[in-house]
Length: 136
Length: 140
Image (cartoon, rainbow over all chains, first blue to last red; front, top):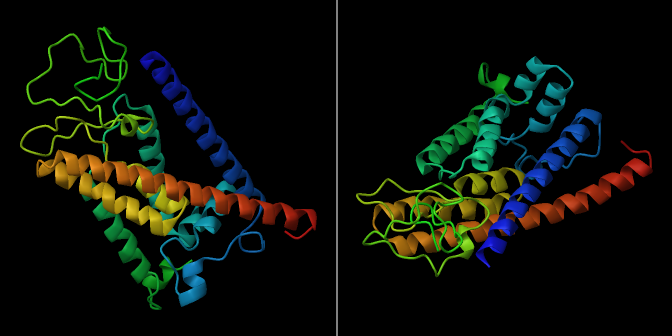
């Protein structure tokens, strides 16, 4: 019974890995193929639609498109924070999937990241240099 | 038989834990509680030891914080935030010695991760249908 349970868990873990990689590949292909600046296929940011302000995530799709097309400088201009957090998020995912015993993430790290995200969201809406450079 | 180190279910009589490699033949440590009431939460997302309190948790309680953050970013923001709140309660409650409360918060964090993921998946499917329709009309 427990052997069956273990095999089931291993199979489920493999399935989620394959599904995650597949979704990632699909997302990259889509972001490569369609430019968010000119294409009408992308959804509008709800926060921007309601408030007219840039949310901390605004510009992420444009940044990823630029990065995939080989323009990293443009990518950093569209969303500096997303570009800086991209390797962190990838590391967290890989770490969670590959560790023998996945360590629970320290909540202090989460609060720190949240503070940075909120600060970035505030700063990029200030219409003065150098903050305006943070807007997408 | 449950691993006393990470809570993974193992075959009865197994010498070492299939998840973390800890010897299973040792007698149970005093104070360790068999996590029979929460087998479900020990599943797919992995386990985690807690070392923040004065004494280690009797059962490793996963806090699902990484999953909560990922569902917040990629799936459903409002429910992902609810998951993050429960996730962050796990470590606090373990540190206070409230292991039952920590297990409960862990279970809720996991539940809201899945709800958020499900809603995200549904909206992705709807959006995909819109994209396919737009592309077949030649609008992109």
